[in-house]
Image 1 (cartoon, rainbow, N blue to C red):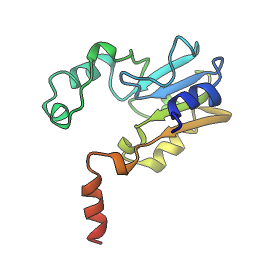
Image 2 (spheres, one colour):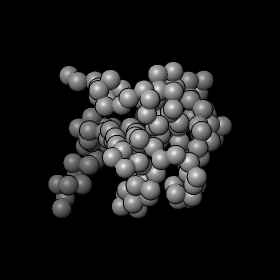
Image 3 (spheres, one colour):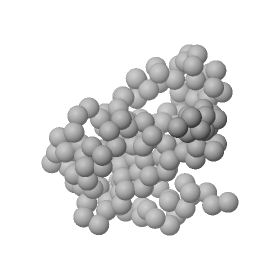
Image 4 (cartoon, rainbow, N blue to C red):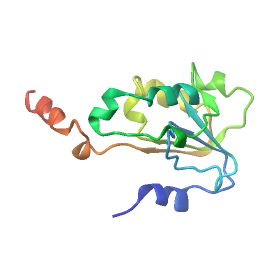
Length: 147
């Protein structure tokens, strides 16, 4: 089985590229040690993320546990349009999302918006969950059977 995280790091990204990773939480694909010009973005600040994952009964009930000490510092808090947030900044050679796209409420607007911060011939790399292995897989099947 291919480890897509390693494949992206080793085969798709270049350590000299200017890279933005959305929602890295505690396990970024793009590590700052390897990718000197990498940045992290989220809709919450580092402090807000740590608070969200501290004593969260819902997450604990699903078996998800996050060590808040491992949460990486967020460089850009996303509030508003990307073009405004990254105004006067160099465009990114690559934008990476791992298990983030399914949380974006307006996917079309996201693609339009993210295109404003990706360099010409840049890369948008998206890893999304496989429904067969998600905790709500059977709920999704039930919904599709009732159509």
